[in-house]
Length: 115
Image (cartoon, rainbow, N blue to C red):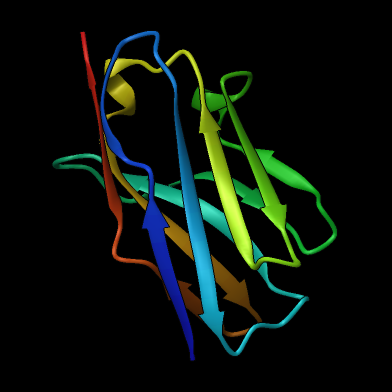
């Protein structure tokens, strides 16, 4: 089992920045990938950014150039630096850890961007 705990959400004005962090504990595998998803009210959960065990990253088109995902394998953490936030970034952000056949999820942290 893997436990994921997110932190860093909050309220910010449009144009501002936030940094989310996710700490993993339990049965950690260095081959896992980690990601951030988000779910806005009334919408489906969507991928925001993923980082592979080798450090490769991919981003949703809507956040490219504004968000940066990074991982620290030694600390089993993954972070999401969010700059130039927009009201449409408002959502609950979830940390995800993926290995073959399994997805683990955190409980989420709320990000609210005011206009």
